[in-house]
Figure (tube, rainbow, N blue to C red):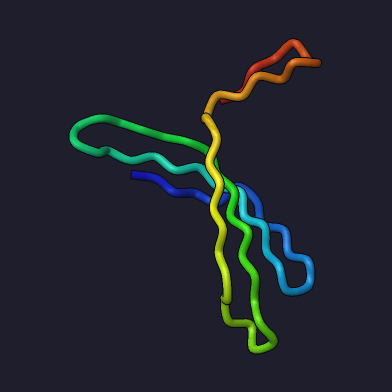
Length: 68
């Protein structure tokens, strides 16, 4: 349903991509936030991709706020 990219950071041959994913799987809506770490070779071709996910609702323990 959605897979927008929130931020992209590039440091030499490594890109860090922050995104949100939302889908409808077997008539159930699911969503989560994620980060991908993408490594490139000298020809700028992807040589590895690692993906990580977290809950969409985040609690900040040292601040009095919650984000969705």
